[in-house]
Amino acid sequence: MSDRAKYLGCGSAILAVLVVIVGGIIWITSIHKTDPGNVGIIIDYGSLSGGKPKVEIVPTNQLMTIWPWQPETFIEYSTAQQSLVMTAKGGEGEVSGYDAVACQDKNGIAVGVDTTVLWQVNPAEAGVLYQLRPGQPLTGDFNNDIESTVVRRYARSAVAQACRNYTWDSVGGNESAIMASAYKIMAPELAQYGILVPQNGVLGGEISYSTQQTQQIDQLSQAQLKAQQTQYLLQQAQNQAAAQVAQAKGEAQAIQIIDQALASNPNYLQYLLIKEWDGHLPSYLAGGNNPIVGPFINGKP
Image (cartoon, rainbow, N blue to C red; front, side):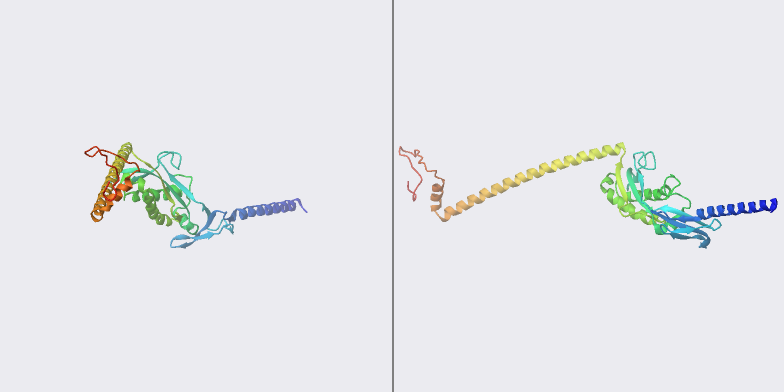
């Protein structure tokens, strides 16, 4: 065999090896699997429906192959529950500073309401979320992720809208009702994005008042305390008066009964004298020097 033939044979072998290696790399990188806790979707840009690409949900742990020359994309979303935290205290949510929801009452007066929203991707509607927000991560990139551009926007709007049915000083006492109303407002709006908010998934926290509002609340609390004290004293006086009236009525009824008994039975007075006698023979003067000894028996001493 000539040297040229040897070189050609070696070159062909090397090329074959390279083809196998490249093919293996392409094959490995073309295999996809949905990890546990995630929902996978295939976006098929080669099949359009209504101007939108076809979306296919990929079950957990299922393998699929997407070749580089195919007009398809595979992505995953976590289906774990997320927490959007918006508070007045910095560092508890995505925003480092004050982030309580501005809650304007029916008169336009605002207070801050700490709010937490629980949300997650609806596995059955993950394709809708991708079509509406392609390429956006769920969290971790403020002002560019799903949480801050979708969930946060609708949550703050819903809470503010629910507050309009109350006055600023009654927001704290009706916070649960406000959060329930906010849920009813935001849940269907976020569902259009393929996002689920569980019932009771909108939670209220501390209320932030201005200095003037805090002073007004303190004054109101003091006034209510004084009113309660006054009511207590009034009730106490009424109870005492009622007791005195009852005692007077009882004494009057007793006198009336005695009078009726004396009128109907002259011996009743004799019975009372015997009943109250302590067994001693008291003596006292009645005009002369002879003592009168009681009790009387048959009206006679």
